[in-house]
Image (cartoon, rainbow, N blue to C red; front, side, top):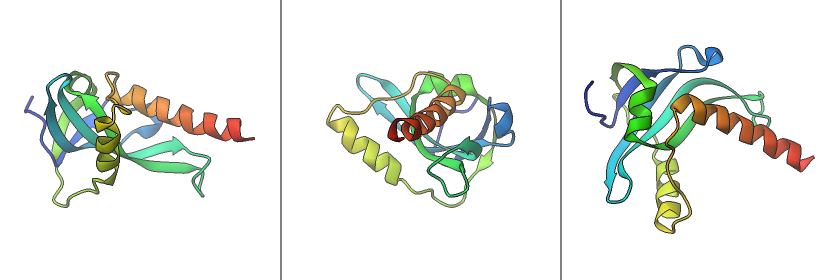
Length: 128
């Protein structure tokens, strides 16, 4: 398996409803305490999102993982993006990380997507 690099598009172990979804490596960096951090976007989702006008979101723009979690999630390299994705989510995370207010995932990408969907729905229920 090749090392992770920005622009790579990977097939991963997605939820059944996200068949065809891919993760894109946004950035790879090393942290003295956490090791290699792989920042990804997840595209082609069918994420139930009550805040979305359609009720569904198809993208998570930024998720930071330890390398082992991503390595255990990916199946094969599908190719490379030619355009650069927006790194606003990364920049927001980086600012919070530097204030010790953000961390990284050590769970699978699939588990993180499940958690994101649950959090979106919990937020709606707690507001009503």
